[in-house]
Image (tube, rainbow, N blue to C red):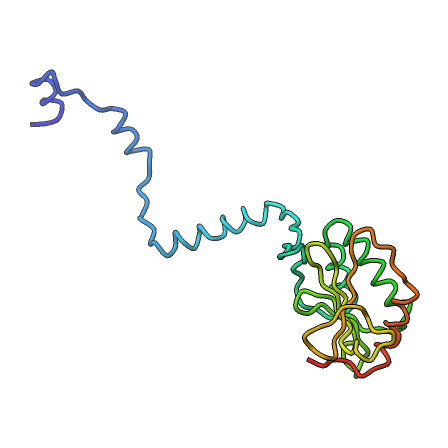
Length: 190
């Protein structure tokens, strides 16, 4: 029995002209292997990722507001660290960095262990500073040899600290003397 005869014999069966027309109009496609489908999907995902502008991310602040900056030598990582210091510490960091540069021409800079380091090429590091919640800790690695002694002791007999608090009126002349003295001593070599 033909389909036409079936429709005439059974009035409940309706012809499907749309489905037949779609089947004729649509060419048959072969199923794509999964590897090809995945390969084509990746470039689209990559294109979408490239199309979106990346938001500038601020450095992560660790405990006490200490910026997490990638290790690096030179002025750029130190400037990035200082720019990421929170609140009043940023201005204090800029002033301290400028004081070190004025006091020790040709000073070598780097960021190591999330802290700016200052040293002399071939002699090691003579000081570093680090952000804490309520102050900035300046570490003189051979501070026990400085005169007068920086005020804060360390567990290490050679190291002395100087703390900078918000609103402190810094004695830049004394700090500059300590910085010059420290730069003339053999530095710390990790």
